[in-house]
Length: 126
Image (cartoon, rainbow, N blue to C red; front, side, top):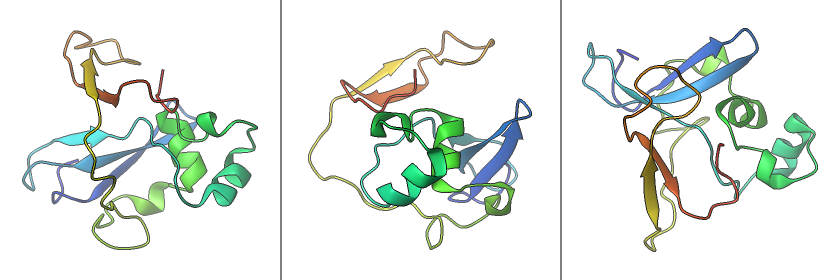
């Protein structure tokens, strides 16, 4: 989390799954954004095989589900997210209705509106 901006910070949590964050602050300063959920648009067959679920809305709707579906593990910690194999790509160009809410799945700083999501998305982490 103290690495170069644009790198992956991957860690194992609760003894059972990985979480992936995007480092956002200057090197040496802790700061990252946790990827809690994504809408799958490509690679669905592989994600379905990795997750073995019947509904696509459960493929990436949670930090542990996301890493499992995408095959993200400790070996991705520190990778540059501007190039393959794990990278951030440009998405849709049309504006989406982004909302904020208090953070979820934690016990501290729950009042901070640091959860950003697309309103009405079926792929939200709940």
